[in-house]
Length: 200
Image 1 (cartoon, rainbow, N blue to C red):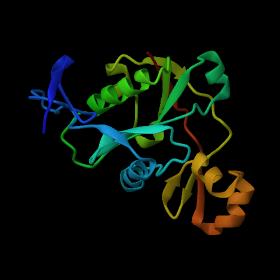
Image 2: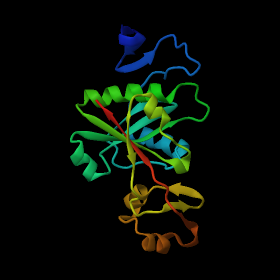
Image 3: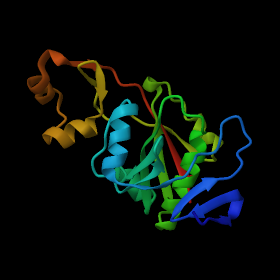
């Protein structure tokens, strides 16, 4: 395999990137490439608590993790930051040895190449996420997000995002979900998420 050295000790070949000689306790992410939506969703279904995503614009990753990008879920926020894209999911295989911040950094290179000016994402306290990985990577904390009116949906004990329910059924209304899922559906109060933005 022919490889060429580019900035920051990144080896690049065949459109993929890898970091040479990682020295930190958590290694830099291995080779990354653009993933198909199917490849990314297989990982999300296996390893992410919210599962797969429809409407993926593109995904960046490798065999043990990925970053998935979609259009902004908030039209108001899209208006505030024109040219914004959303980091909808970031996931790594359980037990991975590389830093999530390293994978995110390489994924954001692709975002910038595609001409996006801003990237938005959210930290979910219900899942134990506090957003420290974003702050460490110089994202800006844009504050607490108001509740969007939806509780947390759990079906058969697994959390399902409202977006996924809408993709499946054309609605995410509580009464409709109760009709469809019956006692399989359990609702919990929704904690407030924090929103973060990366200016590119």
